[in-house]
Amino acid sequence: MSSCPICRKHPASLDYKPFCSRRCADVDLQRWLTGAYVLPVDEDEMPRDGDEG
Image (cartoon, rainbow, N blue to C red; front, side, top):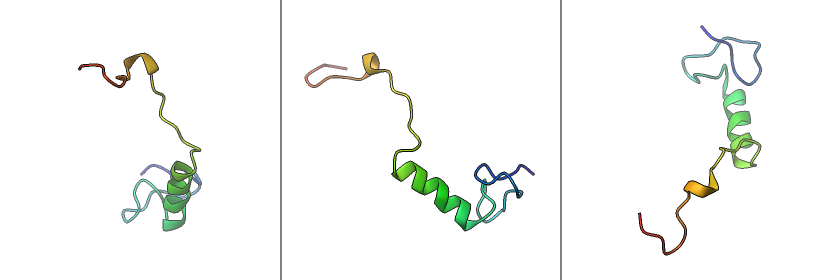
């Protein structure tokens, strides 16, 4: 079993996989909601207003 990606101390729990606990799952969610995690975006591939396709 792999270790928790947040605390890296405990193995992943079946109930909270890939996290070890509800606490670590909530920490991950909080990081997404506050913008600590971001997905890279290539601005050249983003459609502009009025562009087709």
